Length: 99
Image 1 (cartoon, rainbow, N blue to C red):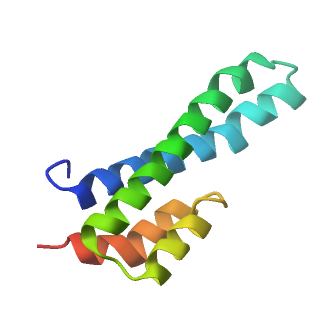
Image 2 (image 1 turned 90 degrees about the vertical axis):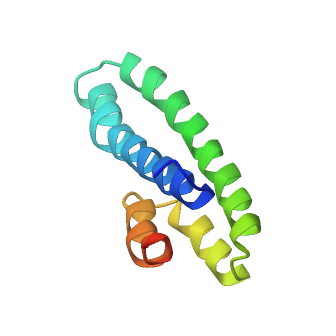
Image 3 (image 1 turned 60 degrees about the vertical axis):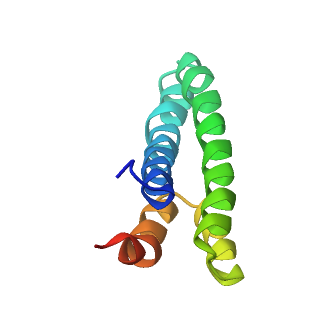
């Protein structure tokens, strides 16, 4: 998976998706339901960094793979909702990475 730009993008998109789920389903509930704000203080910045890495990798992969603009825009929108990066990877990117 790490042997190509596309493989590296797929890896960072999965990691970013996991961080989104951890933030929304673990850290935020811990903050508000259990009064443990430390969870968001740890996971929040980590997710922010991974989100920025996703965006950088999206631009880099879009340019190196010469994707159409539509593919790039869909990648931007996929980064917003939880599970979006997983769906984008499964339906849009994975078929391009198949041998």
